[in-house]
Image (cartoon, rainbow, N blue to C red; front, side, top):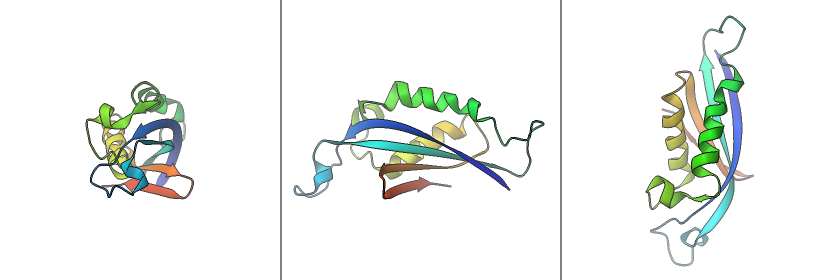
Length: 118
């Protein structure tokens, strides 16, 4: 199995509802996110790629146009835009374009990651 990944960076705000009032994520706050899309295949194309990284620019454009410097609760219409739900959202978006997508990871901080992998 061949596996590739590519990271995309963006900044956005959100609020997580349903947390205690003293929880910092219950307040409006933001993150410098890293989204990583992971693709895998048993075979390589004629050039020797799982998929050309340049083809993933559509994901960069989507992130830049729809998520970067936005309030994620408004964009996604969800009161709890957790990293887990962001990973699932970007997985679904990516998988509909590239069948080799196997996972998406989201980082909100340098020490935390959430991954969606069906």
